[in-house]
Image 1 (spheres, helix red, strand yellow):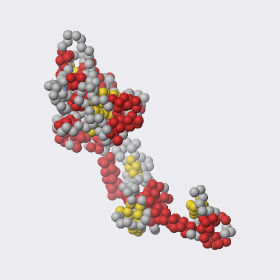
Image 2 (cartoon, helix red, strand yellow):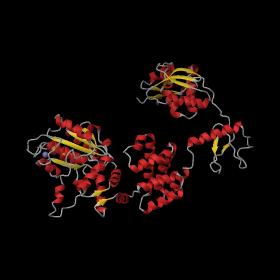
Image 3 (tube, helix red, strand yellow):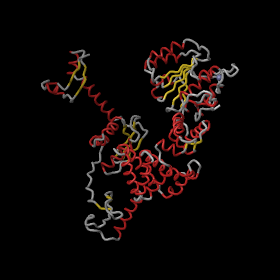
Image 4 (tube, protein in one colour):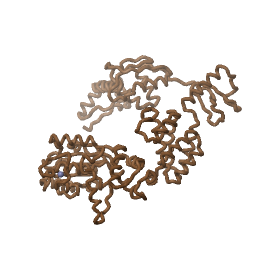
Length: 594
Ligand SMILES: [Zn+2]
């Protein structure tokens, strides 16, 4: 069944128009759809139990087979079987009039529309008008809407009305690459399927079958390269295979052909390059790089591949089964066992990071080959450096030796003497020195001026404002209930709005500022109101008092619509009594707009 179309090309009485592989080998039933087991299982259950959804939403990256799946669903729903008596089936027969017409895109009841080009509400209205009429010859009228997220808001609204009360003979199949842009109201009325990227191994096996059907010989490595480049997309992979077959001069597609086509470097050569970088032979590395350049390899792709090797070696180091298993190609397995065993994890990690940095340099540089060479040179010199862990160990050991026996040199590293001293955190590695490692002592750190220990919780919170930790300050101010305060220890209850690491952060900063240890614990006790709450309560109480003041009451009685809105200073009794100091009275402001 996989190659239902094959016979067509073999009856070569008349020249048959060339069809691209992706079209020719487009799956027409679920058996041919590779790598989407979950979808097939769910749909099988739905059909067998007779519980068919009104609408399906297919989502996934481009090229994984969304529209293909949509058409297979249309066939499944409408197949009547070879004898014309069958019902909906997970295995559409492919020969009944419905199956045939759908495969050839000419079934009157299966309507396909691309929302990317028809996004207007009018188009949706056309559909909705059509929904009222039953199918002409099929069991269900199936609307396939591709890139459904592109519909306008109005179009979605119009569609939603139909989805809420769909006629029983209508089914919708939506496809989208951007599920997040589809309104939840629509999503909630669909059965959703996430189409996955297809595994490279599955892809490779599929491409093998296709090339055999095309009577082409293919090297396994060639197909593996195509599968890797396809990145989970059957369609992209088949297009690449198409090109590779077209380029092949003989009846065989070789790995070299594919590499040249994709601008890839030879894997073996790349591994040699990787090796050269790690045994510190920059000249050899540069030679290989120019060879690769002559073969047309792209500098960025070279770095990608080197990073891929670093990643493989790292993984093999962590799980030795991988290094011996069949999952890796032989070449990689060998190198994992030899070179990989020699390289430390930190060294591999460093290589990976330098390669990543190199990629952006190569992209930005005016001459990408020059940039590549610079990256390679840097990498091969880095191979000479001991891993960071060793470096620190060496420094520490020399520091101890220095204190124990060696006479202390005069001054800090003057006159070319190798000064080795370790003082607190003031370590400086003199990288320019030809000597292996020289550590120079710097002037002792100045005394740190610690903040005074806060005496109250309020003072503690104010410290955060002083130190410009405004976010923490506002959290402490409004999200923290004080349970217990003592110098060096704080017990609090926080609201849900407080950040998770609040206690840790507060304790750390207080420690830094005061030079003392602060233990901040979270409590379940209710504790005091937050500072913000007490401030509000305090304000309200003052306002209440003010409102009851005889003068204010007199004002309010005279202007019934007035309201006391702000209170800036405490109004003193005598001010009110004498009513002579206008300035103070003006601190009361009224609002009579209401
Ligand atoms: Zn059929």
